Image 1: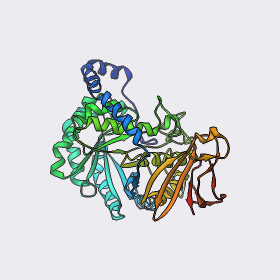
Image 2: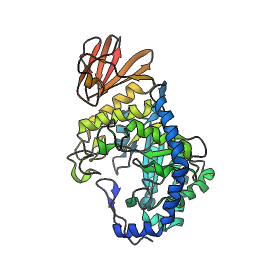
Image 3: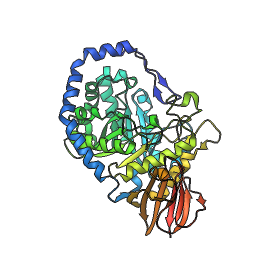
Image 4: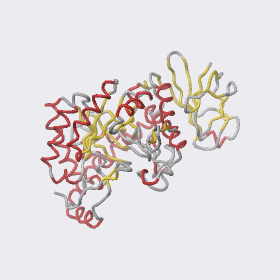
Amino acid sequence: MSRFKFEWNEFADQPHNVAPRSERTRHHIRHWRTYVSLVWANLLCGPLAFARYRRLRKLMFRRPVAIGREMFAVAVSPRAGRNEEVAALLDETGVRETLVRVPSWERDRLGDYEDFARLLRARGMGLTFALLQRREDVADAAGWARFVEDCFARLGPFGREFEIGHAWNRTKWGVWDYSEYLALARPAFALRDRYGVRLIGPAVIDFEFHLYPPTLRVLPFDTSSSLLYVDRVGAPENAQHGYTAAMKVALFKAYTEVSARRPLGCRITEVNWPLAGTGPYSPASGRPNVSEGEQADYLVRYYIICLASGLIERVTWWQLVAPGYGLVDSREEPWRRRPSWFALRTMVAELAGAEFMGKDVGRAERAERAERGAEIYRFRKAGREFAVCWTNGAPAEIDLGRPVARILDRDGREIAGRSGSVKVERNLKYVFFG
């Protein structure tokens, strides 16, 4: 068993990194051959992935994309005595897909997770389960395999899709190199056909797609997943190492296509922006923390960028209720719906069932510099056409080339606007044409 006792941060819903850096460094040195094979896998797949990435970038936002309700998802966790309230808040958003984390260290509570899953299914929710590991599971392979089988047997009747492992490229989650993740994931594949489940992975967090060739070449997942956070650079249009959220999505798809042995859909199974002023409840410190208004803006912009790309089949926000980053703040009574909750509800109401038609930059009546920052995504739904507009820079008056019949703000409130042009700001707008 692990020499380092697992410690869970109940405020931020993540583990403490209890293993000292010196111990982790010694592990990496002892397992140097793992990194040689990692480099070799990327030498084989890397050039192909970047060639495919360039082709995908040329196609993004240039093809129609049907935006189904199943493309929007929000993760939820059971709350003792308040599960009905959680389910109702989720239901009210209009989302019909959810993800439930199931930690291995709570295996004696699987009955509670069954009850929660049954409640969500009764409300018509589709469920995906993410199985979370810790260092003890790497050391006790047989115990982990029993946990996986118990989850398939008891939760499978409520949802057939299971994400195997979680954020394992961060040592605080207990896996210290990719070969350990391969060993952790293999029992799930041995049980897949027996329980009729679909497996999702490799559940890599952040911008680390070099881990896809050595995992997807070995593990025959049914769907490729990424916990694709972009919060460290603020807005999703901002670049990290030269890559915006849109570019990262294309690279995620490209690495999946060249690494997997068969075509796989791509899902983002976790994303959020932590909130400033929430103290120990925030899962990050410093720059990633944003205001509640910024979180709401970035949530909608991230979903639209990912789904309109045509490369991502679903995005899941982590999570519905959480003081430091959730759509609902549970520190207050009654629980408070944050701006991001209203923004999500409006987005789902307007975009679910729509078809993305294309993207343009509009014609700025003033400030050419601002025009370059304008984002205009055009949609069609039930015979009507509309655009979703925002800017990541200074406000600009944009001529959309058509009479404007109605404008909604990010949260679904109707606002005034003069016919033919719209003031585009960081707070996005839904503009319906006459």
